[in-house]
Image 1 (tube, rainbow, N blue to C red):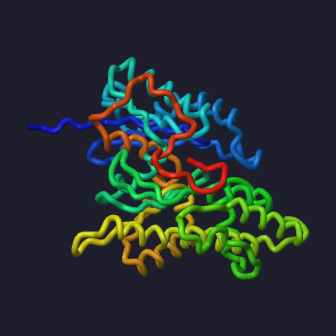
Image 2: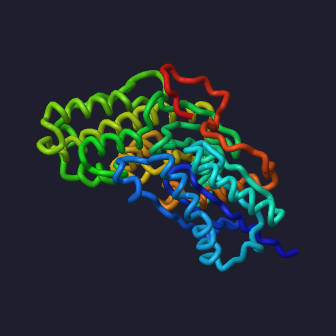
Image 3: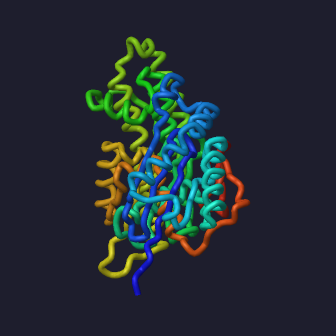
Length: 357
């Protein structure tokens, strides 16, 4: 009997990328289209939610059309439609979910409300053959978490940020140093010519017994150093960038080492099997961070896996794939968008305020 291919349309609009993708159930990505708003938000030094929502609304139909054209398919060929339903900027999330629901209702096909974090969490399985369970470091502009991924819908959070995410710290510090937006790539580029040991910056929570993160104090420390050194026009920006990147990397590595020990205890690998550490999210594209975590994973006996860059940053292919991972469990059309949507709602909150989910 011939297998009928499943073509899943994915839509992502939770922040500043309007994206549409078509993924087949055999893991082929037929299209992965993105309309970026980086230039729009760069002049503001960060994402403006109202501006982002309007931009999503203006281009979403075109992006979906481009994806269908790239895949050489018609809307009638689509088997199901998935959209990011949270967490994220609620205006953008609403644009994507309303569009997806309209397509699902008109075509009478299944609708999948996908958790944006789950899209990142499951994306490595789209890129390569990775079995459950695995350890995930999710590190992006909005989130920094360590999770044991046991299967779709089954997550055990080891740690999360108590304030800013790592990517947010990169963005805000880059803005303070006059390096523009997005901050992560700008800091990584400038840091190559800097001395990472020249400026002393704190490593918040380093050595603590848990796996939680905190980056707001580091951000404040850099701002103070910048002021002491005369501001962005006179301060050694390359040295500041290199020192900041090293401090953030040390924080990520310290918590991840603790998480690897905990994961191995909770999920002992079968004989001859090697546990897997996955890094996902936009910050995973930073080579300095990757090299450090590669070394630490090797030392701990873990295999390190990082999805291709196109699947690390926000994209719709991961949203389509997350839906394919639970193909037989679609959602109802009255599923409401969620600005906050933790992967592990039963996890105890870390100490502190302003916990990111």
